[in-house]
Length: 462
Ligand SMILES: Cc1cc2nc3c(=O)[nH]c(=O)nc-3n(C[C@H](O)[C@H](O)[C@H](O)COP(=O)(O)OP(=O)(O)OC[C@H]3O[C@@H](n4cnc5c(N)ncnc54)[C@H](O)[C@@H]3O)c2cc1C
Image 1 (spheres, rainbow, N blue to C red):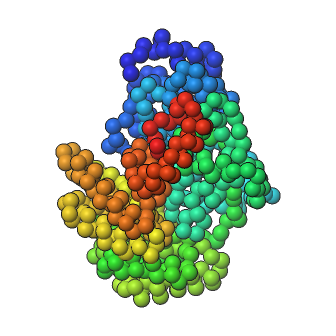
Image 2 (cartoon, rainbow, N blue to C red):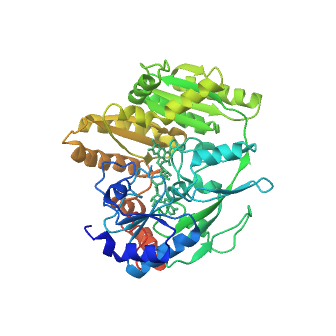
Image 3 (spheres, rainbow, N blue to C red):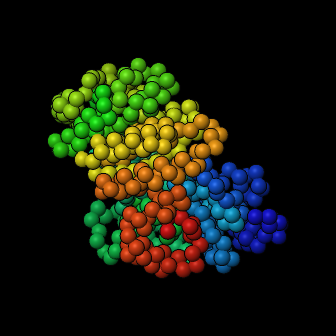
């Protein structure tokens, strides 16, 4: 977009009508909002980037954009992995980094009210100081925002026990595409008045409405976790253990998997002394009270050994457990030290994890691509990371071919092309293949009803 900023009607209208709002117009400033963490995407340069601090400023920004028919890209911290917050040429990016207040922590009702720019880890810390717990726990929790977590219905390491982001939300305040503000719920644990708009907006990736406030469910803080690592000589035995743990009715707070490539990468980065000869490792944690935690890990160990675990070791103390958890969270960055990484996000029913692991292995061999797989195995959600030499000219074509085979394999196993990162702009053509034309027609009807001008994050999801 080469519009002269001084005469750009969007910029002039924002400066005239909301002079207090911070507005980035210099190309060098806007450049930082071109991409999210899907850095290999070809994305557009926003025409301007606004950083509002209040809901009223968001309302006015949306009204101006609607009047001028300018598309809007809502953006949290930009850690997304599906291109949902990536820039669109000529669009206004509304970044929520300056709307980062924890408005209230209501102990009586176990509720927190927050602005969307609050970083997940900051909320966790604030509620922990009051003996409370906010469960949603994406591996990126130290950098991603609550607004982005709502936008993607983020998952993470403890979904296996506490569910995805949507399971911790009571109500949203959102700005609709015409600037109307609505509230979708309240502080009631039970509330079935009308359609659940809260759940419609969560995961909609900024295509239906813009979240300006969220009322979130808290829990009393659980005890510190007990942590175990189980090592396996084959991927299949690790997969069998995952299926076995589900079949045994165990619901550990964490059930994560790393295959050999990320084990070695994480070990190199963190010097943890992991068994690098193992084909796979499971990280299993319990946050049950007292002896129940020990009992849960003993039962988990028995299942792992039956499935063929070669070794099971416990973290010596909470400090060591924290190091291990951090190493798991950083698995993607550990692989990024070795090349250019493209992260995928397939999901399958838990009983089919062994088959999905086998499929990933054979897809990697067939396309001659190094794939390190890790992820939330307890949810059946795996992240095959494709690792290329930097500057490899075949990376793009190979990624497309591998993606196609990965998605086909996941769907054939009754799974999904995205467990938690979203359709965004990277998986759009797969939505209809997975959901079918009738379901997509209903989605389009909802989009058309709520955003008739099509200005909210166009080209994402649908
Ligand atoms: C190393 C690493 C590990 C990760 N681990 C996980 C994981 O374990 N689980 C997981 O689910 N994800 C994970 N992610 C992906 C990412 O962190 C999540 O998708 C996260 O929810 C994005 O939050 P964000 O604030 O960065 O949002 P952004 O990337 O800025 O935006 C995400 C989406 O939400 C929309 N959005 C943002 N704010 C608003 C708003 N106020 N109103 C409406 N729409 C909005 C955007 O338009 C976009 O579509 C990981 C990413 C990295 C880099």
